[in-house]
Image 1 (cartoon, rainbow, N blue to C red):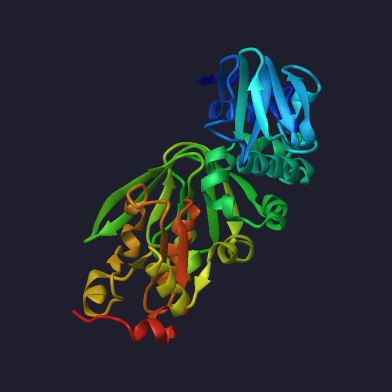
Image 2: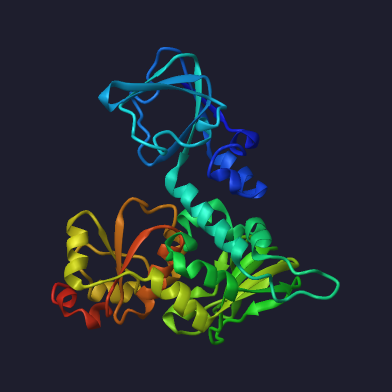
Length: 364
């Protein structure tokens, strides 16, 4: 059994993914592989089809069903355009009559891509068009934009959105052009918008001891501006354009309704302790001086200002319960974690509001 990359032409005849746009199929092809299986082998003896859409694209496959019924499926036939086991009773065994070739695709990924493509195609045309430039539908730019890349849809901000919010989110995003050197948000200002970079690059700077320090560069698909909106505080950095580009922005009220609340999964003190007892981890996002004085048992300290440095280091398969004094800083941190696909939970009310958590705190 061996694997190789899938060609877009192969995906174009498979249902229901054939209805995806060319750009989406290109992305999907880069994430799939064909699986070659030798004659007289059972393709599913070691690896079943649970959680996957599996297609026979070449060769002949004998499928046995309950009640001693069997049939032969031929790659390239009309019936083979559909995933195995989806159009009728599930088979109980399989045998390759000839050498066969299969394509396996993650079910969740397919469903996510189909959902976003469908709502984007049904969304109204972009309002900000000119007489010289005809309106572009959200379906067009959402496919090209890094914010709607497969990675972001599966692991990022949008992976956790309830389906009813998707179309409304697309409708409320405002598309705006920005010039090189233009300041988008300024340190110390009030938070008003959440931004996603469609094209171009930005730089993040902060004043430290009277000196401007460059903290990071941002690229297409990256988001910024969420911390001040979630924590209801001031902007903690200045972000300006390193090149000409296009930004998508969402007003604070829309951000709160469509992104902030759906992604903040609050838990009580008791629920938090249960998650930690089951292998989860407390994360204290306060300053080290606060953490050293009063912290929860077993908690690790990752201050809000350093949260981004933890991404890629912490185990994505583990659950994390974040807290601070009041919930304000931990809400911002939880959003950042959730935005990058971590299973993050917010201690409701923080240490002040969760008496159960506070009563079990440790003092250094």
